[in-house]
Every structure is written in C-alpha cells, then in structure tokens.
Length: 191
Length: 191
DNA sequence: CTAAAAAAGCGTAACAGCTCAACTTTATGA
DNA sequence: TCATAAAGTTGAGCTGTTACGCTTTTTTAG
Image: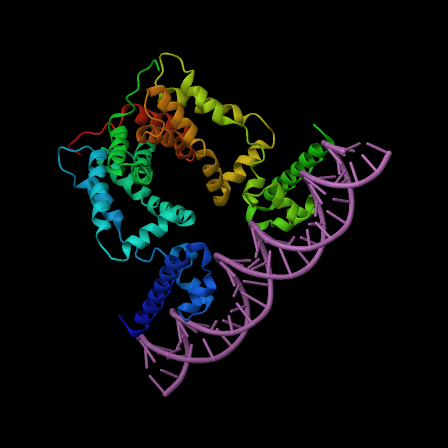
C-alpha cells in the first residue's frame, strides 16, 4: 500500500474519529458537518468525498462483513438445525461477542440507540444483506434465487434483532421471533 | 364546519393537488417546495404549516384509517381462519379494491414506486400501525400487549405487502409470506 | 355590535446537509 | 523527468426546513 492510500486512509480515519468524539460529546444533531471537517482539518467537500453517503455514514466506519457470517450460518449449519435455528444461534453469538469487544464500542452503541437517524441508517445497512442471505437460503432449499418465501425469511431474520432490541429480555424476544419463523403462529382458529 | 376550516381545507387540498400534478409531470426530485407553494399561490411557510412532516407528506394527503380495518380483521375474523390467514385475506382485499378506485390513483402508485424517498415514507406510515395491530393480536391470543411474538407477527404481516410488491406475481408472493407466518419455514434439518 | 383572542398566512433571513466547478497540490509510474 | 490521476481546496449555491415578527381574516365573548 503506497503512501497515497495510507494518507487517504488517515484522513478518513481522522474524520471518523472526530465525528464519533464530537457526537458522543454533544449529541448527533448538535454537531454540524462543517465542524467535523474543521476538527479533522479538512474541507467540507473533502469530507463528502470520503463519505458520499452523508453524515450518518461517518459513524459506521468499519463495515465488517457480517454478510459472510450470515451466509455461512445457513450453508455450514449443523445437521440438526433448521435454517431459522441456525440464524438464531448465529445472531445470538455475534451479539454477545460484540458487547465486550472494544472500550469505545459502548459509546458507539449508545449513540446509535439514542439517535433516530442513526438507527434508521443502521437498519438500512443491515438489511442490505437481505439479497445475499435470501440467495443462500434459496440455494439451500433448492428454490429460485428470487423466491418470495426465501426473500421473506431472509428479511424477517434480519429484522429479528431489530425487533428484539428494545424488549425487556432481548434474548428471549429473539428466541420468540425465531420460533415464529420456525413453527408459525401458534394461534387457534377461533380466537 | 365553519368558513375558517373550509378555507384551510381548500388551501391544503390545492397544495396537495399542485404537488401531485407537478411530481407526476416532472418527477419528485425535480420539483422544489418553493415551486409547489407558488403553484398553490401560497407562501413556503404556509406549506410547511399544512404539512409539517415535510415534502413527502404532500403526496399522502388522504390518511384513511386502514388501522381500524387491520384490527377488525383480527378481532372479527371468521371462526375457520387463523390470525395470519385473516390478515392475508384483508390485505389482498384492500389491494385489489384500491387499484380500480380512482383515475389518478395509478399515477399516484407509480410515483411512489418510482421514488425511493416516497417508498421509505410510505413504509414508515404503514408501519405506524404495528402497535395497534400487535395489541389486537395480543388481546386475541391472551398475551401481554407488548409480547415480542405478537409484535413480531404484527411487524411481519405489515411488511408482507411491501415484500410482495415487486415480485412477478404479487398475490402468490403474498400468499407465500403468510404461509410462512402461518406454518413456519418448511425446511429440513439437513440442508 | 364591537373588542379581543385565535388562527391563517406572509416575507425575510437563516441554517442544515449536500453538490458543483475550477483550481492547486502531490504522488505514481512509464 | 514529466504527464497524469487522484486528493484536497475554495467558494458559491441549491434544497428542505425553521424561527421571527408582522398583517389579515375569522371566530368568539362581552
């Protein structure tokens, strides 16, 4: 990696750092894009060249590929698990691991949970994996890649953590959601 | 209804009309808010007093209460239908009815389908009913109003039409989604 | 009937996020 | 070494949105 790309990465990093610092200090909505650019000693135009998706993208610097993990959870699941069960296990796992990963990570999560715009953005980023996950599920079930049932399952599985977060007992809620996907709604016909 | 409210409704209507006309003529992103206000012979400030939720709200003037219909579909469903089946039927029904309702309605739908910002907004409006629907489901099943399973079912049922739209055969897709919610994912344990 | 409260509307000015065009610097690589 | 491409800068400008202070109209009460 040449000096050029190193410098570029450095600027990008300093932008993301400044943004995260200022946001956690004073709140997302009370920090303007101009100020972030100033703090990173960079022009606003440059900021938007590094983060073309806008202000929200500044917070989500590290785009780890959870997509691979999702697909793997379906493809290489143990023989005694259904697809929903495998996804359930995998989502439980990554969640707990992340909590204890980084010192600044708690601030990061709290910031996202607090700010509606960031919640929405995070949700959108997360749901981008729907296509890949649906394809993996379809392949597993021997159906067409754009089969509506597979797309629905993928979508619902990805929304499960979003729904579970915010419940009193998130783990139990997540289990309930995946139980629904696994066995269907247990209601009787007469209410 | 006094003269005051009549005039208010009139300006609101002329704003919505102008917006829909201009949007369908030249596209959502190519029509500014100032221009809409001009076309309705009204100041920009007034426009935002009528539509505080912003530009997108101009398109969704008629906020018919589908919420009541959703709740009723659960509460007063025939004895031989499960909750997902009842919701499925109700969503099929309203969909087909709406298509043939109004002459300008096709433009309206096409505009929404074409414009990402409007799709997002419509989705958000639609998902506002999640709470009420979840409460109805919980009541029906004898569970707590904030039960995660009920919330999940409500959420998934509301997202079903969003998912089905865009498939080759929307009706078939909708049926598939509700079948998933009714009976669970039919996959085997060994992929 | 008239005074006053309430509400609709107006115009200006401003701020936010974001983009564009033209220009300068700096590293790359042929 | 020198042309080129990429990073960065500057500065103006557009769009949605809001605040402020003001006028006009409608309603309501005394």
